[in-house]
Length: 342
Ligand code: NAD
Ligand code: ZN
Ligand code: ZN
Image (cartoon, rainbow, N blue to C red; front, side, top):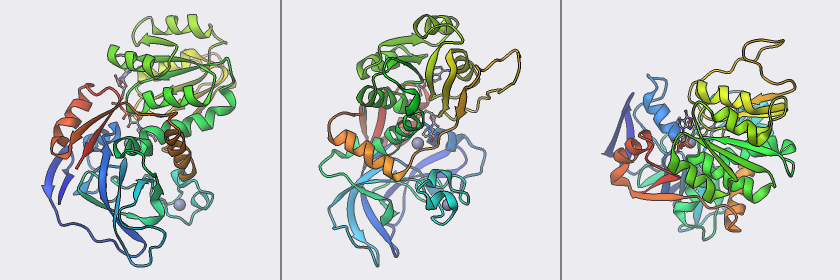
């Protein structure tokens, strides 16, 4: 079969590999669609630290092809979305259903610490499959990360997302545009979308953002005119970029008592400082680094999609285009989510 593999740090190649076999408790899935996540670019850019060779692709939907020994509850041909996080299953966090906080496996995932879905077939633990009924594969795949991760961040900040409050969303790409859709579907907050790209901002408006602001010098002033000046501001800021400039913007427009959700893994830093310093974060503000989400939350995101309340802006490409698609993602030419179809 074909598989897009990280063969060395920085190198993604479409190669031929044997079709894997499902072991005990596992399922062989025929891949229907896989989302191209910006995290894959971070993995590609990491100077080692990830196992090689490994098939990337952690946003997967497909059809059951074969069941490994001991698997029940699935029949060949059934459609499924894949919950991508691999926790140890035994630690205090995993036992509470918080595999995204596993105390044993730091960042375990299908397509991250074991072979993923950028291939014709992928083997996954049966426990990681969720039934999706007749949802389109290209819609279901992005739900498992581009949908789930913002949903989780929104769930964590939901107590602050009161009707009439403001939420600033920074970075309207794969995750950010889904965040706006989910906010529109499940809250009555005013959404202020921020991006450096005009097309991304146009997408934000289509997804339901009431205001759009181009990232840049006067962005803070523009946003403050909408959300109010400090100590007023946005009750929640979701940063899907996570570089120094967006973190500075985030802390400059969050309200006292507000919530900063630092989802983007851009490598920026946020200084939390007490007293009157040069980089104040408003009093009572909470900063959190959410990671992916829980299995239960994925089921809820799938339910939102099945009810037609959440729909990704999808650009589908054949798997043979995989290298070019990641180049496009890196150049900022994908608005919404690119998915690869084997
Ligand atoms: P994407 O490439 O689809 O979108 C990024 C968006 O940010 C683009 O619209 C781009 O124009 C915009 N942007 C880039 N730099 C900007 C800046 N300085 N100011 C304003 N806008 C800017 O990326 P994605 O797939 O949505 O992923 C977003 C981030 O979230 C990545 O860092 C990714 O690794 C991370 N991520 C985190 C988790 C988690 O669990 N914490 C999960 C998935 C992805
Ligand atoms: Zn991802
Ligand atoms: Zn664990």
